[in-house]
Image (cartoon, rainbow, N blue to C red; front, side, top):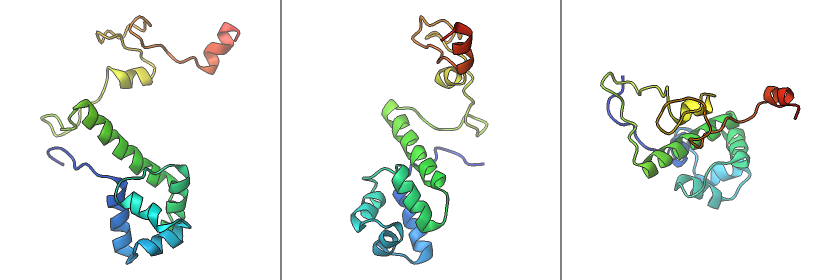
Amino acid sequence: MVSGVRHRFHVGEVLREEMRLRGWDEHRLARSMGRGVETVQGLLEGRLEVREGLAHDLAKAFQTSAFVWLALQDGENAWRLLDAQGTSVAPDASGDVAPADSGPVAAIEGEPVAPDGGGDGSSEGGVVERPTSRSKKRSGA
């Protein structure tokens, strides 16, 4: 079990470790990716974000899935968002991060939540369910 707040990272840290394990420098990775050294430096320094094209190039270089690199970027983005909101990622007393059974996550999962946390499904709280293909068929749209 991990205690305390997890370390914030950026993709460049993971990239640097992968390069170290392979004995690669920035030029070697740039060649493997078919990109310029400036791109690799931007990733290592955390100035560039991994998008679809870079994810595919990193996957090719490291013989991984592009999903790995996109997921790492998503993790970094989540940390930034939490920092901007002043939100902690500290586990609760049991050492686990508490599940989100109300709030924005519940709304995303199809349970709209009113601002008071009531979850009554009304749109008055600014949360509106996204229409699904089934609801479009039912409404004749």
